[in-house]
Image (cartoon, helix red, strand yellow):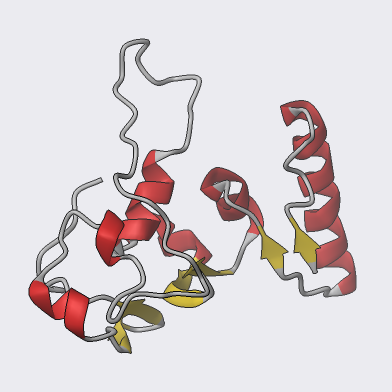
Length: 150
């Protein structure tokens, strides 16, 4: 289990560590639980990705399908990826609202006060974790037939 194992490291050192982890994974058949907020880093070597918010599973999908993420929190994490290719004046969207206290969680969806798609149902009922396509699970009331834009 690696919890924010590369967060305080220089990008070049992160790259070296990730390459070493991938090599060990391939050679030894090792499975990692890699906890990290950097979705670009996670997507480099993860076969399955589980996105959690305040201890709640929000989305689970194959690593190579991350670009097809549905949950608004996962999409926000993806928008937070910095790229050397991004435009100089590109707006970086910040999630509104405050993170609720884990000791006093709101009724309903834990992400409701930061979600731009929050509806009355989100405030009243915690969404079920359900499969929307093969091997892709989401806990969200937002209409699943509408694509959330990145």
